[in-house]
Image (spheres, rainbow, N blue to C red):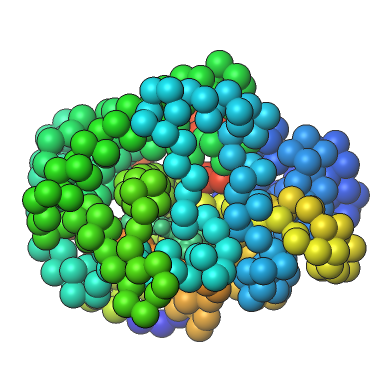
Length: 442
Ligand code: HEM
């Protein structure tokens, strides 16, 4: 396929008639990534940061936003200077941590810090133990099952000619896939979605105390639910991820098995990371299909060719990354992007901004499946913390894209794009509810 045929210009509204630098500094001076309008449509804010202040201090967040591709790479190459553990802790339940911890200890069988959100050498051991649950052969075997799940989910709404792309499609598909993987046979999808949001909001920096308490209660329910399954698999191992983690061994390590609290935190991490992010990617796909018919046409042309479908998925992940910002904290004074940072500076790595950088991805708001550097996007992070579930995520999105375009066409939003609401978090860019209409393909 010729490159020209695979380029579609996406919506990148810019206000006309004003010098971009003046527009940018006005935007940076007065605004925060947490402002709802910026949080929902952040492109101009990212542009301004990269151009004018690449390691920008956001006063409201009290974090430095690292917006350029090369600075994010620098951070990812040095997990000791830029600590995940310190950054994550400082962000977790920010402002309410002690109360949050007490609720979990009282009603959720304990507060179990995220073992994977750690630094080497501890992180290296945990990652090795977690790898047990991600054998390549397990992911490869999954495709027929994922196909069945996607098809059955589509069957549930296709005759209506409309659906909520989040609630009727993306969320049920991803929850079913991760529950199958974990070995959870009976579950309430609405609860799992609520629990997922409750966990991701702990790093979202946008919850008030009332929301924190409600979220903490949801996380207690989640832990009690998962621990019951873990206790069962301790005694009755099966072919599933919970069993893999409960019985994981890393030969050659001084401490070759997971402590119970570590295992709880990893099962919880898989349940949430495997669900929220991938569901967001699928919702973003439907949003693009409904707002850019040219992209829907590209997908139609790619549906029967796995190579093209994979390229479609990579460009989708680049142009609309589900995870837009994750944190780090400096463990020593350091210079980054021309700014001197003290020890203890709290950073937010703006993956979504790096993916939009013109000199790395020319015409970044153009959906271009033929980019020569398609795989360079940072939507899965990089370095030692690169997403452990990326093969599973890619496969799910690829199968979802193929099955959607084989069965449906003529996607439209049924509300104005400006009315769509996004979850209040700086960590992901997740549409809350996506009402769309479509025609069933003959
Ligand atoms: C489209 C879907 C997904 C996206 C966009 C995504 C994105 C990411 C990103 C950006 C990171 C890096 C974190 C950092 O820099 O600190 C990450 C890490 C991680 N992801 Fe994913 N992810 C996805 C799907 C999944 C799935 C399906 C699973 C598991 C079932 C998963 C499990 C994890 C875990 C456990 C980590 C932590 C790895 C570490 O710190 O060593 N993710 N993911």
